[in-house]
Length: 184
Image (cartoon, rainbow, N blue to C red):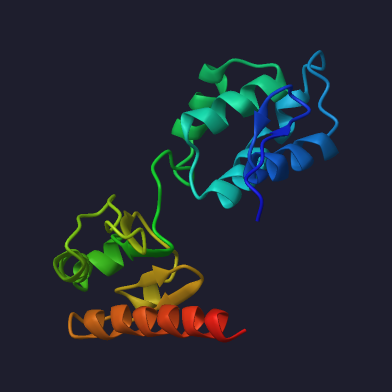
């Protein structure tokens, strides 16, 4: 993967991640004079967050420039929607549901156990960037309470004793992936 700077359609030079974002924006054929140009902003923010893992100020400013809007308008959308984040996340994103059903079934203790084992609090990332923890309002799986989601997996009826095993499972998967890459 090259890190040579590339000139974007918005007139800036930057990395491959920005180039990927620019390709997405370019396909939208945004006309900065069209009042409906912001109709695709949320979709672009989702795409940017997928590429970068979060939405740092540099990405927000870039998107604003490409859309012909102010950074404040982009920032306002990001702060309004709970899904968007301006802080980096770990490669393995742990989300503990704190909705009513999960909470009354012990999700707070589950969250505390993840925090204890990983040595970080909700909203933080481990120093190696592997794990991050968040608490969510509700994931909509109340029948499985308490629920933990990790990347694309859902864990239901989680017990405190399950937490260490869940973390170890991801550490093993990570080491197997690295080993496969070395032998490829």
